[in-house]
Length: 219
Image (spheres, rainbow, N blue to C red):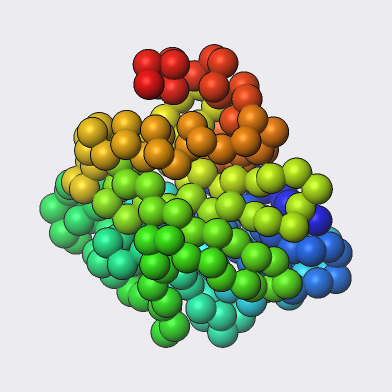
């Protein structure tokens, strides 16, 4: 299993590249602002072939580069329908007036091929089997991706769970009540050995967060 991640320079949003191994097909997860150069380097270094982009939610710091990444390689993007609007209208997800420059960009559009994720789904891409679980709270369409077939359980948690914290809930579509439900019903039942690769910050584990994350302790 090959999992490579790097943060975007402006927003420290983690972009993840996942493949069965070097020289194989891969998926790109959450390509944010200014990541295309780094992404090309990772793909070239490991001789990978992207077949899809997975999005944990619609906030522009996770989706800023989805159009160029998809269009350059003619691959689809997957997103939960509750956040799909934000691909072409990122302002709706952060509560600023439409047309406000976002890192210099004034126009946004969907890729040619957008596929909607079901709230509880299983998808097979690049020889990998992902489970999709709807986990609203940070945004209405937030999902987490579980990866089966690895030596250890892996979770791409987006902005639902961080090392020592959780995603904010005060933006449009966010809800602390929904976040608590997601943490209680989606995160806490997971195996302690699950490795968590979040949308921001360092990777962690369910065991570590169960012991040290104050938001999980409160539940």
